[in-house]
Length: 311
Image 1 (cartoon, one colour):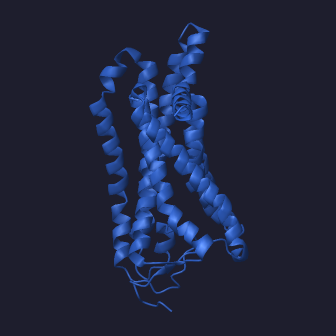
Image 2 (image 1 turned 180 degrees about the horizontal axis):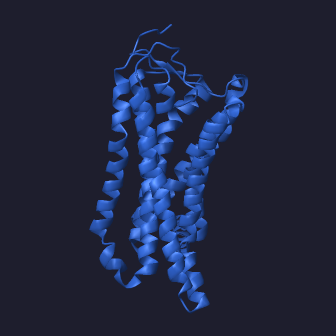
Image 3 (image 1 turned 45 degrees about the horizontal axis):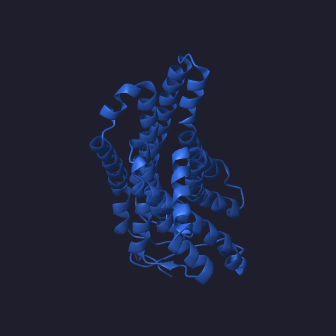
């Protein structure tokens, strides 16, 4: 129908074969989206208002929460639009902009987890120099660098998609736009778009993971050199929240990669469900992890709740 029309809208897809119960499927999505916005919004609010949390570790946590909120708000309108209103059409430009933000924010999140591991490395391995190394200005520069890395590196594969011709069905396989989905519908040479993302992921997400592992090897080596067992446990306990968030993020990345690479014969619903797990599970879990494992966050939340209950 849309043959050779680059400006024609794309058609989003929900859960194939389950269209009759999309309105029921939307209920858990509403709950999850609300929980993500509430959890990450609360983290940002208490970090902003509690001066005792104005430290590098919590600044990076604020960037992580902002990234999770950004990812959620980027996918939420189209996902709920498809499930609740059966609104499948999305304009060509809007689709590519959504794809740009989704992939940019994924790289930003990986970078923030790397920065948080560096924060733990400095805090444990060189505690006396922590304040002189991680100054407020340096933290701001690191955060800005992570944002630029994410948002600039995604421009080269997304920009050509605005003008290349599309002569296939224009039907996407998800309820949001992904680069790999849109790319497959193009009727042009997409060699660059096939190779560049692989190289980019290797130099960002994969490299970040290697550096995080290496930093924790050095942290563990330092901790094992501490004579007091109590001090060792205290030092490691400060890393638990970050390690948990790293595992949540990279396990979902690995799971999604395995499904796409080796699950070609798996039902479509498995692929779709795994993509939602990748986009929703880390933003859902990160505030919970830090609320449970970080005493300063717990105190701030308790103070916030008690203050509102007395007013």
